[in-house]
Each structure stands twice: as structure tokens, then as C-alpha cells.
View 1 (cartoon, rainbow, N blue to C red):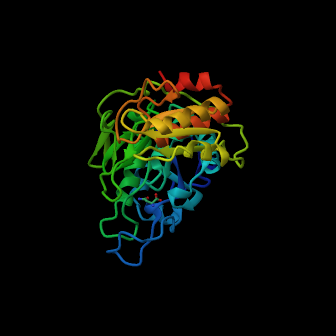
View 2: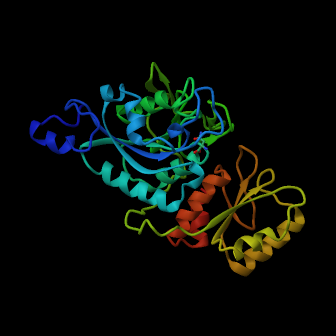
View 3: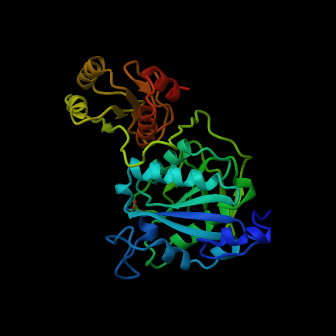
Length: 347
Ligand SMILES: NC(=O)C[C@H](N)C(=O)O
């Protein structure tokens, strides 16, 4: 049902909205950049374009259908390639979205984002926003100027999802290519393809049919979900540095100490198979862990799988390295002990 019905509250709600109809729900679109806001020199150029070139007003104006489903307010958080998103930008985003969703007149939030690190930001929002209302992160693989650009339909899908009554209680979701995906499990699997976001083992939450969301199951949160309250931390302060190290044949045993020396307060390992390391490297890893007490999370370099049983560290379970890094950073920011961090990861 529409959130705004009483005439006397209309003027307050109108403020800041790009389009307004008292019978429609209210959504805020937070724009951060990426290819969905990307601009190339010609319509047939799909690489080498500038990410984060167009502002949120341009993105909204390109999809007039948005105003048929929702009142949309656009907020430009930053306008960057997603490689430049960091913990201060994400803290700012969480704090603004939380405030917004706590407002009874707001129905949900949509975040536009580059796809390269979208899986990290979506997971961050999932862990730091406390609300039943939907948070939807959306991107595109083709710049806004391209033939068959996927951004406009993805944006309309995201807004339709954010106002859908079945979308509540599912945490943060990811929308691209007619799919609804879980922020916890979904990753970018292909550097170029439009159907890149997948969770091979956990699957999708639903699909879009005629640009309308259809869910497979009732709402639920994934096992292992944990909330981190960052609403009152100063957002300008970066969170503790966590490095991801990649395992391979002949890996240098010195990389663990090098990470600590460069300021890492936690380490995530993209290990071989189910979290293994070559024996020489493992010895030096154990020495660093024993000497510094730094938390080390064992994840995997394979795309999918489950990591358990690595005695020298904290086992990542189903979380891949990029998502493990986000959770470890939030755990360190919240000053959790190594044992408490272990309890969060090893459910
Ligand atoms: N498709 C994209 O959005 C890629 C872009 N480099 C980004 O992540 O910002």
C-alpha cells in the first residue's frame, strides 16, 4: 500500500524527489559511479570508457518509467570506478541509508555501483544495515552510452524490487541481468559478460519477469548472518587495513610478514583448494601468526567451495576472499577478539 496518503504530509515528502505522486512509495537512489554511470565516445564502444562519468540525475532521467512505480530521490555519494570504493565511503553510505530507512515514509533504498567490487559493497551493506526494508545494489556491464546498454533496465528492475512487498526481510540484494541475488553469496564471475553475477552453489533468490520481481522462496536471512552497528562511528576514519594474499606454486614465504609490515591488522588468504598453502609458506605463516597474534582467515582461490579445518587460522566457510575481507574488517573495527572473530566465521 502507498506510504504517503495524507495530504498534509505531502509537502515534506515532495522535497528532494525527482518525481512525485502521492499514491506511490518513496525510494532513494544512492549513486556511487561504475559502468552504469559510464560514458564512452561512441555507441559501439564497450571497453576503455570512463566509469562514473554521469551523475544520478542523468541516470534517473534516462528511465522515465521509474516515476510510474516510485517517487525517486537521487543522492550522489561519489562518482568513481568501484575499484576506488573504500571503508569511509561505505560507512557514509550505510549511515545515510540507515537514517533513510528508519524514516517511515521511505520504502527502500537502491545503490548504483560499479560491478568490479559490487560483491564487497553489497556484503558490507548487508552486514551493517538493520532494517526489514529492501536494500538493492545495482550495476551494469555496458556503459550508459552503449548499444543495448543494460543499466536502464537494471535500474528500473532494482527500483521495482525495492518497492515490492515480497522484498522485505531479505537483507541486501544484488540486481543485474533479470536476476535477484543474495549479497552474501553472489560474486562477479566473468570480467566481460552481462550474466556475470552468480552464486553457483546457493543460487538466485528470484528473477524478473516483464521487469517484475518473482521470488522462489519466502524471505529469510542466510545462516551465519551477523549485524555490525557502525551508525555512530566517524565515517571519515578508515577501518583497519585487511590484506588478501593469493596462494600459488612457489609463493614467497615472506608475503605474510610483508603484509604485517605494511600495516595490515588482519589477513585473508586465498588458499589452494580448501584453504591449503605450500609447506614452506605455511611454516612462515604460522611463525607470523604466533609472533603477532594477527587474525588470519583461511579462504580459497577457487571460485566456489567451503573452507574448514585449517588449524592455524580462522576458517572462512563459504565466504570468498573479498567477502571475508569485509567481514574481518568490520570485526576488527568492532574490536572483536580473535576467538569472537572465529565464532562469527565458523558457524
Ligand atoms: N561494470 C563495471 O561497473 C566495471 C567498472 N570498472 C566498475 O567496477 O566501476
